[in-house]
Length: 382
Ligand SMILES: [Cu+2]
Image 1 (cartoon, helix red, strand yellow):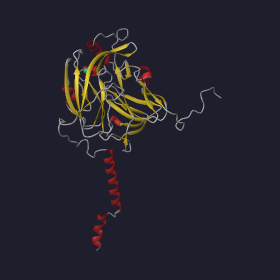
Image 2 (tube, helix red, strand yellow):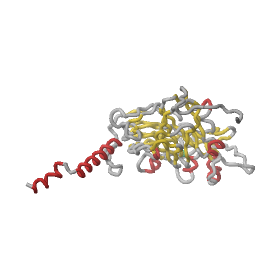
Image 3 (cartoon, helix red, strand yellow):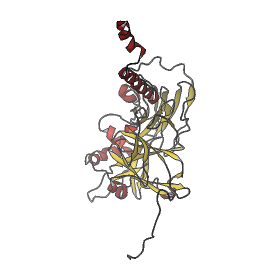
């Protein structure tokens, strides 16, 4: 009898130690399920090449806007058809200062692409005969073949098409990588952009609960290296070929002549400022394809910041400044709580104010004294 009881006790779960262990195990398992799939990224396997999936076309739009998209995926994985047309064009990046920009779709940065995890991106890349350079595209979101760079190199007058499965969630840089010194020169001539791969069930906050954004903006920091003449003045460069030849010396200084947001100084300032309303949750996606930066929202924060811009990690909260290593993108979500003009900048303040890595967000709404109240206006010392 005694022996039977001794055996039974642990099985019936009356042992308090065992009970605690089981409860902890269940809580951990539940938390793991809430944060996403319980399959490790290392153990993921993939089947099929997507040939039979439903197709949708995504119309590209110029940054800071994002293409029309759903935050929570409807239905199963799809093939998302995207076309990027390469344009070599002379653009003014600050009053009087120009560069022969290398661009995807004519903008610096190139357009944001938005898909969901397990969708396929089917890219048609066109290099019109009016261009002078060989180009291609390397997607940091893709797996193999140099991110697509090895199978997308095209001469002027050619086009190419390839497809990759978006297996990992997050925001990822894409850029031209035609080989050798042309890689950095095309990237610092503006030939970069980003893709956002959303989890199929949408974003989750730090507690694992669903969170949505009311609007999203894509801001890219761009470093430029304009060649100078013997007097230190920026050279007037006649052709894209000359630009590539002259820029090699300029980039080796590792000292940018311009650091701007969205292609040119003042692109997101004044009448071009971004807008939001009090109570709106705004997703800020920021990329830097070449150089480290650090982003700060003056008068605000990142309520949620995904380390490295990768959505399957638990977001950090309450950030004052968030870093973006060169060659990556970051995502931060902020709910505006007070009206006014906010400044979104590179918090190397020299790079922001002296060079141009600075944007504004104009926020409309009612002032809330519960967060800040002016007690006394500036006046003479009493
Ligand atoms: Cu290129």
